[in-house]
Image (cartoon, rainbow, N blue to C red; front, side, top):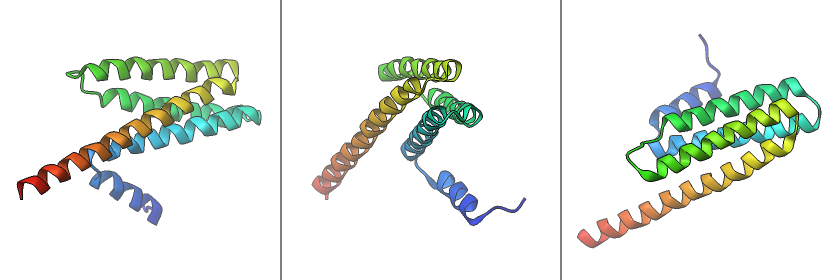
Length: 133
């Protein structure tokens, strides 16, 4: 099957990304589809809203599957993700964008927390490497 250059780039990006970069990509996709679903609900394009809500739910299921339950924070994240799934289902059933908008807001906050964690870890790693040289 022939792939567009963009599809080839996407596949390469996924294959060469670190686990944390993959998590950030999942967040980006979930945010994009959640926002698109809210926009579609507001414009009364319920088929498109349904499609985007299902895509966002699939991504959140992937986030749940990626959790390492050896850490307490994973249990908390799993609860949050389950809440997001519930809210996305409510958005779809009730055709109400506020549910999707709330999920998008929380996803943006979590994505930013992950990014800050990555920055902090990188800073600490550079201090460790710099101190041991």
